Image (cartoon, rainbow over all chains, first blue to last red):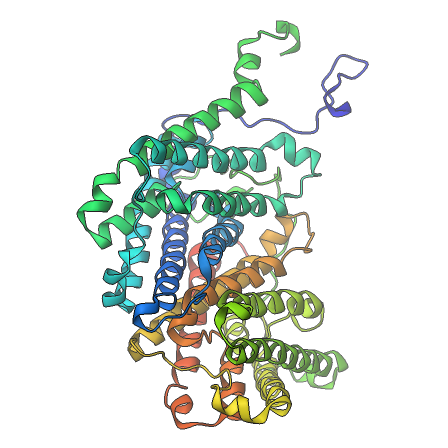
Length: 285
Length: 286
């Protein structure tokens, strides 16, 4: 891109600046309301996410259960469930992007933490808020229809018959890679510059990434790619099968997020190399 | 994004807030929070734009009910669910229509098309009481006419197939229905607040092109989730229009849920956005 070419005086003509790495511990942010507001926003967003999505899952199973009053092709379909997940991420990222960064997913928070975009304190607080929000969201679903909830699997993630543990783990790793890689691309300051600093469309590809991963992996694991989502449903449903498989939904997403962080930071943006001065003389840094 | 004056202090506040992830670089506020709307503004009664806005709300709600209730009737009349657009198609009709209509009327009336949205924005002091009441009346009238046209197309099937009216489904308590309406409306009105936030507009470089899209998606998603419970109201005008034209006891028995729930949800969304997210009452500088 012409934007990256050095000007005649040897100075960079880039119109963007990569933010400096966030310190691991930033005690000062604990004194700001904006941190607590961000945590509250993550809690509420994850609560709404789980409420809408798990309610959609249970509603679909009720309406398509032909032995209990449902009908063939009843309910919103598996496609509708995928839309619920992807669409909900779209609107929640849209609503909370300016408040908390719109993570709504511990794997996204973990990936951004590895890329030094959030501090450790903030990352931990976000993850706790996300898990609590997830539990509350599924709790609402159960409160509204407890017998249906228990009868139809509680929206919990577990490995489907016919797939082995390794397959489920790999599906979660690659699915989360797709999501977190899209998040990195959507929030890249270089991309913002290229898009003339109009980030209005950032939530849309993130929501679509979630939607498409759900299309692909609902048959395998019900699609976790969000440890808070899996955790919330497992806690409220509380049966042994989901708990037996639960480790897949933390290990897989965290590995996928780490790979995405590495790929974006070190391969696509080569920021690690830049910071080491490998490609430039000291005078130009 | 936020200068020192923007943040509400919890303790010492020596340094400006670091730029949130994913936001464009902005070092100063280039937006201004609009002042609270007066409760009564007699001047607007003599302005054509006031009546034009009301007419726009009427037409938008009329079209909304016409498209959505007709879609519902199409699904009900089909020989089986596989031969129709299905429940997901109904959800798309509601969400997609809100997207299109908000896009068309945003600059004229604010594109509410929903008494709960009007109520939430009124609580946030974004429009006057006069305008809020006028909008709600026009929305209800538009809804009645929209459902009326659908009945006009097919009087007998309309009455035998439920008329697209909202009721609490078998297997659910009225409390569950009320809860679903409250949370569903919270999702919608909260999205409306986020989409119309002055600060967001500045962050998006004042490009409002896509504000209607998340609002339409919010409606679509809530319908996916709560159609099995209540047929999804989250819009008192929509529920009222269908109930009046259908006019059966069981629709009226549950009707209170579709006003109380949405209005509570809208109030909660207004509180959350104004007090927690924007902390407007606590700003040290106006």
